[in-house]
Image (cartoon, rainbow, N blue to C red):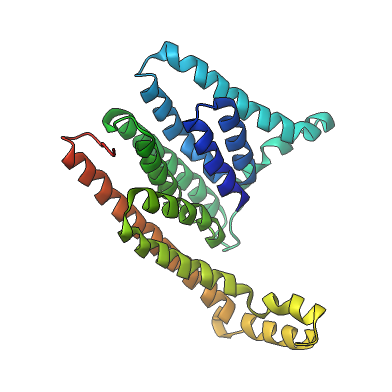
Length: 277
């Protein structure tokens, strides 16, 4: 996922104190997918810790970061500005809150989405506050709370393909901290993601049928029709889709449980502070 790559790049730039570049890259990630926007609170907490709580010292890096975010937004949205279509510039935010997932729940789904985003926002603020008040300043501390922030994003159930954000961060977090137990949620998430991949069924073979003689297109079409048909909506495609989504959410819950254990384990070892060095 390009959004994941950009989000991780912003993390590296932040550590290197390249605040303009970090802001610009995170802005591009947010314009691709809204999820990375929630890690900004942990970034703010990290810079405040670096400035030792001094507002005066915080102003300069904050302004540079804001400049980077604004630059990315203006550059990408400039054609809309030229056309006078200002409303389209914010469609990547409003479409998430005003459009459902097609489950047919109407207003309940729309307002439920908004409430879930508000809940995630509140949780992210709590995570950032905990980092600032109880964390011991270090790059590893930033990585840990960055991991927690990404996991919190998926408290709001998302369509399965977005889980790649969490999978990528789990790999880095587990490797840096030598936490083998995170292989369990990683495997659960991968199983769910694999099941979701197969929801498209035989259509994955369409290119093979088109450009080789191994399969006929008619065969692929017939197989595809078999996967989308079934009594009471219980088609193979639907079973794989919702089954994959449920398994992935179990992976999110298990990830959260291990992160909670890790956070309190470290604070117990350091007299209440989350010291990860």
